[in-house]
Structures are given as structure tokens and as C-alpha cells.
Image (cartoon, rainbow, N blue to C red; front, side, top):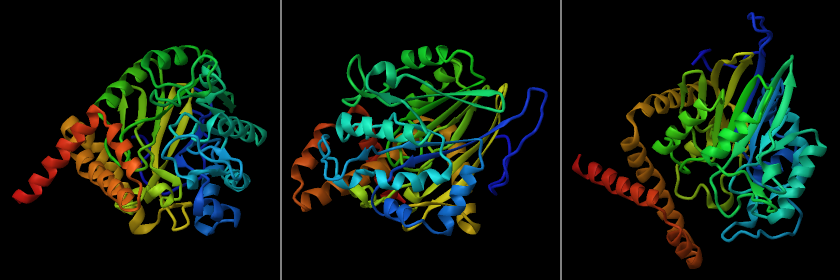
Length: 389
């Protein structure tokens, strides 16, 4: 998909008949929580500082800002949200040394501490010169794009997450809803920009493959004028593909995250939660000029590092595999999701029942949707296949 290879290099500036290109480097899920926040505050290690420098060399650096910045001692307003998922404002300055310019707040955790958590997060980021988008004090503000200008190019960002109780409405704060008509309207209202980027918090957590409906939605968004679609939420790597002139990166994985917080890692292969990639793209007057994936790996402290040697090769091969497997379609998605995700969820529920969290387990079962039953069938199918071998 454009440039090949996984070794980071310096930002490029070339004249290609359409003007200078702009380097965008995007990372996935970021949360200033737990051991990751502690490590940031203490300065991080050499691996983190190298990764931060790599991001800061870009003209524009992007992240999904997963957790709100929370006032000390405040409690989450959402049920089943662990207090250890609270974002720590005192780690923000250290994180922004990575040169992050723009962040999406359109995700399922941004309202975990209510409107105060959202408003504090927006205000803190803006005071530091970072452009947040995808959530706001009402629907109009949530749909406001972030537009950055570099080297004479105007780059527009809009962000969305599936409609739930955290969705912004008229007069109600929250995140921008992931609805095709709203996305099409937002893209059309971007106006005079050279590159249109859509950030989507979507997919099945812990699954390496997008749902068939998400691939169909990606194609619709591409047809509506998006040049680049950046996905997050799954906390593991998903693949990339291209629709005509539109590049889609379905999931970049974790970049800065305490995977022990909120039991996210319980019963799950930690390698998947630690592997990720920087989407390193050149943007020009005609959209995305080229793109590559630069493998990253979470350190034990939850901070992203640039993967090296065998780890880099393993992650690069994994990205190529899940990108190639996209052609397999829905059956592969449901079998994989069932095998990995349902198994993981069952272990989490069992752990909570064992620790006395029976109400949590019951709420998890009550929230089941049709896709969960498809995953369950996939889980059963994968187990039967293993027994027949």
C-alpha cells in the first residue's frame, strides 16, 4: 500500500506537481491511566522517548484519546466502569511531548465520568494547543471538525462512535454518533479542505477482523469523499485495504495503555494487546499519496515503543496476514471473533463472579446483541474443529 517496509525514517518533503506533501502519523488507543501514566510522569524510558520523537517529527500527529481526564477522587458515572480507568491530567504534559496535534474523543469511554470529565478533557487539551474533535457539549459541537493547515494544505478530521447512551444530542453532551447519513453530511460540510480524514471507534473488541457491516460502511464513507479512514477501539491490530482512492486502516491497536486496568487483559493473549502500529502517511493535494504501517509494541510500563528486530518482523507479518484475510469475508470474522472474543468474555465474567461481581456478569449477559450470538456460534464452530483434528 504505497511505501513498503517497517523501518522509520525522517519525514519526507517532495514536490510532486501538486505541491509539498504533509506527513501524518496516527496511533490508536491512548489512555493516561495506571502504570502508563506513572511511567509518563517519571519521564518514560528510552524506547518511549524514541517513539515519541518519531511521532513529533511528523507534520501532524493523531491519537484516539480513549479515557477522559478526571479530577482526583471523582467516581465514574457509568455502570461497570472501573475507577482505575480514570485519565490522569498530571500525565498530559509528558504525553504531549510526543507532538500529538489532534485527537479524537469519539469513543465509548469519553463520558464515563459524565459531562464534567468530558468538559475538563476538552478544555485541558485546547489549553495545550491540541485540537480535539468527535465529542462536545452538544451534538453541534461534537460534529465540529478539526482542520489543521500545514505546508499550504488543509487537513480536515471528523470522528464518530456507535450510537449509545454516551451519544451527543441537541442540548446533550457526548460523542458524535456513527451514522452513515451524519458522516456523509459532515464530510460535505468540511468545505475547502484538501484531505478528508474520518476517525471511527468501531468493531469487535479483541478481534483482528472488521465486521462485514463495517467494511460496507467503510466503502460508503469512501464514496462520500473520505480520503483516509482511521479505526480504533478493538485494542488489537486490524488490517488495511483500499477502496479506489480511499485508504482504510480498520484498527491500529494500543499505543499507550495499561492493559491490566479494568481487567482488559484477563484471560487474553497479551501479545495482541501490546502489538500495534503507527499509520505513517503522506498526504497531498490529491489525498493520500502513500502509506505504511510502522510496528509498535507496548512496554511493560504500558508505553508504546517502536518494535525492533524479530518483534517488528512478527508484527509486520501479522498486519500483512490480517489485511490479506479481509478477502475471506464474514465467515472468517465470526469464527475468529467467536474463538477469541467470546472465550475472553467468558473468562472475564467467570473472574467477576468469582470475585463477587455477579451483577456485572448479569449485566454483561443482559447486554447481548445479535452479533454476540453470531460470535457464540463461531466460538462453538472453532471448538468443534479443534476436536475433530
